[in-house]
Length: 129
Image 1 (cartoon, one colour):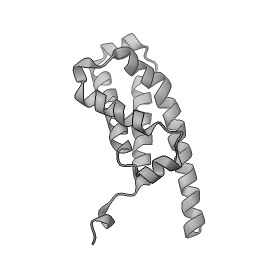
Image 2 (cartoon, rainbow, N blue to C red):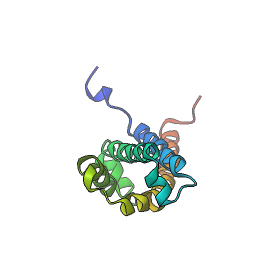
Image 3 (tube, rainbow, N blue to C red):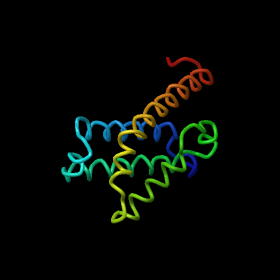
Image 4 (tube, rainbow, N blue to C red):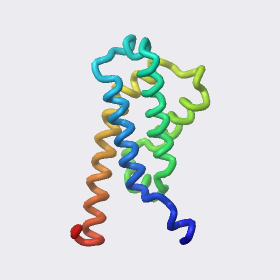
């Protein structure tokens, strides 16, 4: 089998990003910023899932990113890099803003991509049997 045949389908990374986004929202549901920052386990798990969203985004092919320019792919990846490499310099207000404002919006965009890509597959391959 060729190396290309071993590559994971990009749609799976979209599904991963959706799952990680849902975890972020679930972990922080009902918390305010002070509550979020005071729960170490929740904070750590949330940041890890934000990192994973960015990691999955690095796996989305350029042509797919160009097809869906309304998703801030580069910003998502840059956020991942900042979280991983500048852990002592993470601005808590920025993280909370990402959780409250950006993740819910991203989740909706990703679900739209998933829906559209499934329609594309059906139109190319016919309905599932």
